[in-house]
Amino acid sequence: MTTQQTTSASSHDISAFRHTLLALTASHKAVCAGVVVVVAIIWWLLVQRILAFGAAINYQGFESLGPQVVTFLERYNPFFWWVVAIISSLILIYLLLGFIQRSRHRNQQRTITPTQLKQLVQQLSEPAREVLQWVWHDQRHPLTVGNLQQALKELRGGRADLIALAHEQSAILQAPSNKQPASEVEHYLHSN
Image 1 (spheres, rainbow, N blue to C red):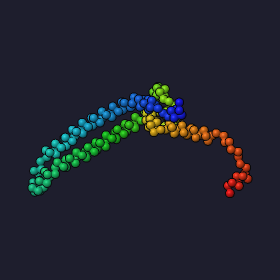
Image 2: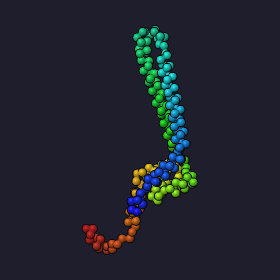
Image 3: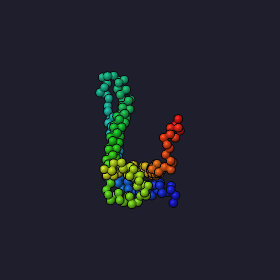
Image 4: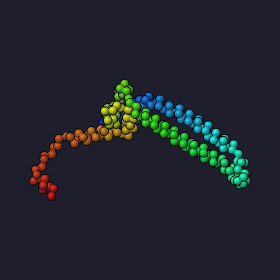
């Protein structure tokens, strides 16, 4: 087996993370999808209602202001109500995105049970375990879904190879030196 194969995370590791994350986030994704569908239906009904309301407005009460004013209002009436519909759509989209982001953040903070972690770790290679350890900065707090998502991202980005390289470089630095220490006089002569 080559060094590359033993220090790199495998596609099996990535698959194990993806499967675990899918199981942990499926309910969150279903709730968000349901909310998006409900909001889309409400949005459609709201836009239809706004446009129907705008089309039903009669500006004949403004005849005292002159026929030109009434003609102007009738001509630009559809545009005004489309602007109202677009603004209400933007507000709804902003609120929906805020809900999804808050929900995603809450889901990322969910802790992983020891059973779930055991099932995942049993499937991982040693390099993938090291990446998971590297991602888990503060081990006074339990692992979260966000940690697993970050570990998957790091695995895909080659973090296992970088960790192996760091271990190799650390071993080189910690190895005893074969070079004889120079005397103070030789050091002084070579530095000038």
